[in-house]
Length: 151
Image 1 (cartoon, rainbow, N blue to C red):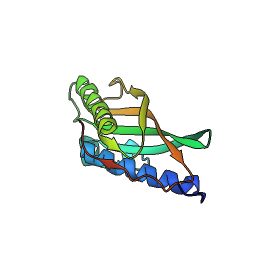
Image 2 (image 1 turned 60 degrees about the vertical axis):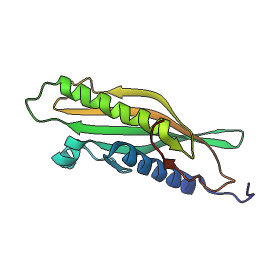
Image 3 (image 1 turned 180 degrees about the vertical axis):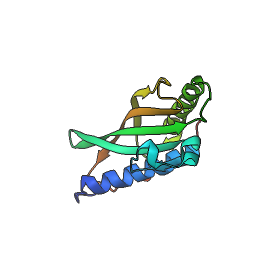
Image 4 (image 1 turned 30 degrees about the vertical axis):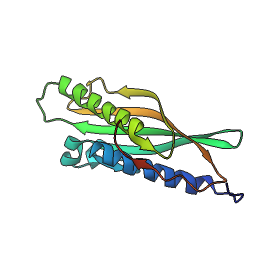
């Protein structure tokens, strides 16, 4: 353990970038750290599905930190498709998250809750997952994050 202080911004950036890369490996979908509305995304991106990972805040307990994050999935299906297909695709995106959690090494990841559009916005759909990342120490280098697949 090092005694040098590492700023939380650098640590959070490194951890979130590592998780984004792992999610891309787990899901095969575009993963970004910059949220964009549906109408600014390409139809091809949305038909495949897009993930956006955003930091929501930080919690400290006895010198260790947890990043509170929001993981947003966006998708679309062709016009005229049964709206239940949106729900099926949203649940498939939920599986992406569970796969990520079970195959992620280097940092703890806990799913606190998951919401979805209930296909009321068909042909568009979305998933929003609240996740906690950590614990992290600011006295150590940011962890190396790898995805090795679900066990």
